[in-house]
Image 1 (cartoon, rainbow, N blue to C red):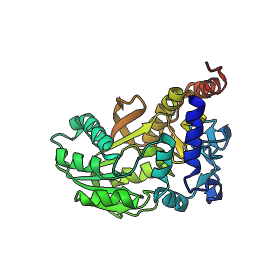
Image 2: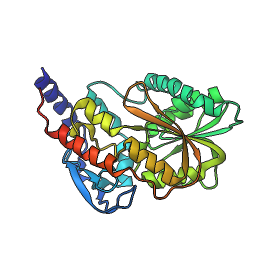
Image 3: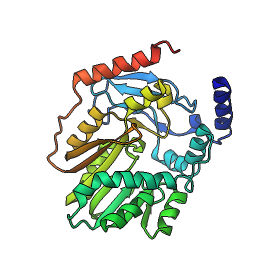
Length: 308
């Protein structure tokens, strides 16, 4: 039964018209978090079967794809390939229509986390980076009395957001210029793992926030992902350039000048959410050597332990 399921998945993925090896890429020579230059290759393929290498920084434990598709390649990827690829992997239709019920549930759950930090704060504006169909931004705008804008690279999804009456901005956050605009709430909902430059984006977000502003960001905890499927390779996918853990995300936020107000585990036991506000940058923040050592040891154990 398992062999049959795997075979059917491979057949579905083979029908997706995407040639990963033909895409333009760039090599990463310095770690996006700590600037280190000593890496170790952890995997040689991703869950879709593409020859995507996941590399780890031996200094801080950040895991990332290397080489990485260019921003232009990712724009094309999100405009027509991403959703069909994920649909083929799961064997069900996942698109701008079917994802909305899940997004409504997500919006309601995460709103409860944010409520204590937004209530009575006279917040007015919101930017949802990677905001997809606008369901989350619309729900939060209604609940917290905000004017919301959605930034996303997928035209079919931003069209849904516009239909909800939201301002939309098409593109990648790394390439869009928002000028002098400031927002009271900036959200990166299930988006940080998709970023092409986590450090640069968080610095930009720090500048986009008003003085009283609040940041919400969540990550797929890489450890939870590979332990759930008991496979490091199957936790890696080309749509996630970065693989974040609690120690690496905490260091990212502190380095960018955010004070973490709360850390929260989502009900799916996979995502970790952070509520933060502008604070003093801690440019030397790093995961501890023990955290890094334990991560490599655990990854090697998962890759080599016998399976029943």
